[in-house]
Image (cartoon, rainbow, N blue to C red; front, side, top):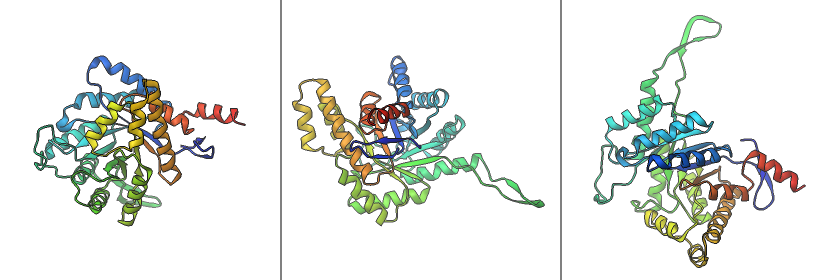
Length: 328
C-alpha cells in the first residue's frame, strides 16, 4: 500500500498494511449487519480479513459464507482460519481443498483450543500441531496443481519443470506473553520457528497489552532464527465486561490502569474513548519500533477499529488526503 498518513505524533510515513479479524455470524438474521461492517472495513483497503472457524468445523458453513462474501463483494483478500483440534488428516485435507476450490488461497493455521470440558492434555484429532497443519495446506495445494513442464526460450523442444502456485499466505499464531501450554519462553520461539520451517510465511500475535511484550518477543524470535513477518494483534477493548472476558480466555492480565479507567467511566461513550485511546497508543508504539503492520481484532464491529486507524492517520485514502490538506 502506497498511501501515506500522519501518525499520532504528526510525522508522515508510508502506510503500513492493515488487516482485520472477523468471526462468522451466529444466526442468519445478523449476517446483513456483519456484511455492512465488512463493507466499511473494506474502505480502508486492508491487506486481508481473516475469518475464525470453530473447533471441529462447528461454524464451517457460516465461515465459508463470510469468506465468499469477501471474495464476491470486496477486493479484500479473505483468510480462512483452520484448527487442528477435533480434525483428522482426512477431514482437514477435505476442508482445505474445499476452501481452495472456493477461491480462498490464504489461511491461518492454528492448533486451536479443546471444547469446554475436555481434558487439557488430551489431543483431539490426529493433527498434533499447527506446523503439521501448515504442511498439510501446502501438500493439498501441491496435489491440486502438480508440477508441469514449460518451454525454454530459444531452445525448441527443451522444457523445464514449471513453478507451482502456493497459497498466498499461510499464517500462524505467535504468543508474545507465552502460550498457556509452554513451559519456558524459549519453547514459544521454537514452536514459531517450527511453523516457519513447515512453510508458514506470516505470524500474527495473540493479544498483548504492553508494547515491550511484542517488541521483546520479536527480538527473541529473530535471535532464534525466525525470519517471517510478525504482525501485532491488537483489539480496542471498549467495556469492562469485554476486558474481563478476554482476560479469562487468554490468561493475559491487562494493565491495572486500563481496567480501572474502564471501570470508573460512567457511560459507554467514555469507556469506548478509554479503550480506543489505549489501543491507539499501543499501536503507535509498536509501529514506531518497526512492526510490519497491524492486525486488528474487531469483535465484528467497525466503529472502534476505524476510530483507532483515524487517530493514527491510517484511515481511508480520501480521509488521509483531507487530513493532510486541512493541516497545511
